[in-house]
Length: 396
Image (cartoon, rainbow, N blue to C red; front, side, top):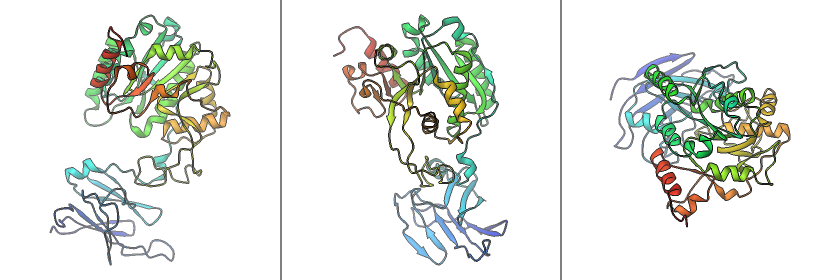
């Protein structure tokens, strides 16, 4: 057993011991509270035993605290990265502990820091575009503008879209405009990645890039920046679509739907609508939102972020009302909050079965050819399905 390492943070002494408990438990971190930091409250000592064994309950309780074996059970352990372990002591005191983690732990734990600031989004803010396509809408006067939010390093996803539905004949004729929206890369290879993004844009002229860090927690920023760009540069298009990079999209089917008599031209937003979606209160859950950030038990109806379509009057209206609503990081739920304030209800498409977030495990050409939007597992699958449903021959 290695010698304990003691660190003092505020009035808390943390004793870290790296050892092994049987074969199932890797590092043990013992947090010893030696003083009172809340009026009248003595804080309990805690022990976190972080192991890969899939037990979802507390298995041991002793004088020094708890052993927790599964991320679902770890209410005090919040986030692990290369050299830091963040822990909640009591109800509102956050400390971090520095130590070396095993590689399996870095890969396994993807929990979030339990800090209110992590659940708010820095918006409104004056973001600006590093890469822009100022003349695209003016040149093509598109009926439909498709924006694909995508991470800078997902080059294969962008390439797959360009060679499939992003190269549809309606796109080639200018009836439909397809653009990719990126934030800034981060990490040690960010400069090289940014240089690659610039080269890619020089070749394709289809990238929008704004100066926020591209991350999961900034998806709401990405969506709001998208609405800003649409409002400023494409006000004369009829509809806008936000579509994820893993979606196989049938543009001709989508255009047929939008030109049907059942689709409105104003105050209209559609997609796979979620109703009565419960707000997650488990800190270990990736979608956790504290009461202090959003006090209600369910979200208002909202279109699932995989693919939603809105009439072009809505981007400006959503931006205006968003100034009154504190953003949360769950971007599609936040769109629902804005729609609720506008008294505009999202509606399911004429045929909701054409928008599929969980497709069957088997592939059927007949089934996929009749969909409008469906999630795929990877770019190769997207390309394979597209080639199959667009090749000559009977679909069913």
